[in-house]
Image 1 (cartoon, one colour):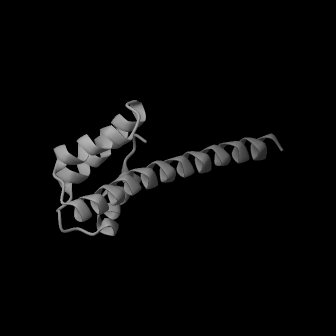
Image 2 (cartoon, one colour):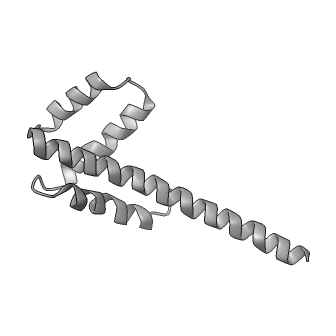
Length: 100
């Protein structure tokens, strides 16, 4: 009985870790998608985007993290990509990272 209980506890933790990773990757992918959507609609360069976002949101760690992911979108995502393509560009590699 004890080995089964230990197995179930470990399995539950692995499942929870995997769900956490999926949520983190979805968060990053959604930031990339939203960034790309705004980029396509406004035509803003990175500095313009950053300035507008900084004026709209409270200056805290959450904003800095989001701007970090948004900056990566500007650097790595071609300007003609759709928001869906930007999401996939961030989400898929994130799932394969070991450090999340």
